[in-house]
Amino acid sequence: MENRTFAFIKTDKKLVKIFFKDINFIKGLGNYVEVHTTDQKRYIYYKTLKDLIETLPEEFMRVHNSYIINLTNIQYFEDNQLLCGDLKITVAKSYKDCLLESIGKRML
Image (tube, rainbow, N blue to C red; front, side):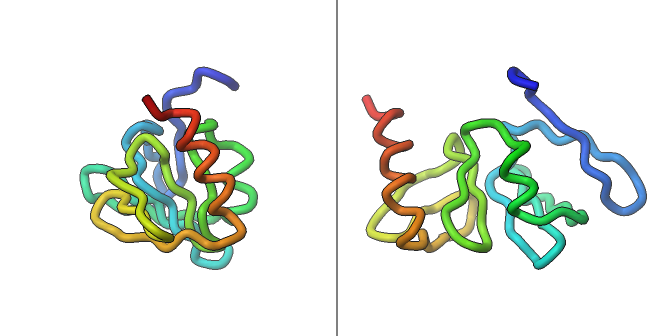
């Protein structure tokens, strides 16, 4: 399971291969998720954020009840907001300390 670089998701009646490095963020839509990639594509498929976060590599982190972000694709983090792709995402208070700790491990 470790060292996986991609996964397949079922969307629009087909299986689509997505590389983890290409995912900017994942937005929760109830029992569905919307995967946003670096090339501006969006994929919607049936899965909850809670179930999904358990299967993703460690560079993915939940920062809000509705968002999982890819730490490798964050442009910046300031106050309670981060820029991931073309979207500013507000980081929930309950996730902020964990996010700062993860970013701290990756600082020069």
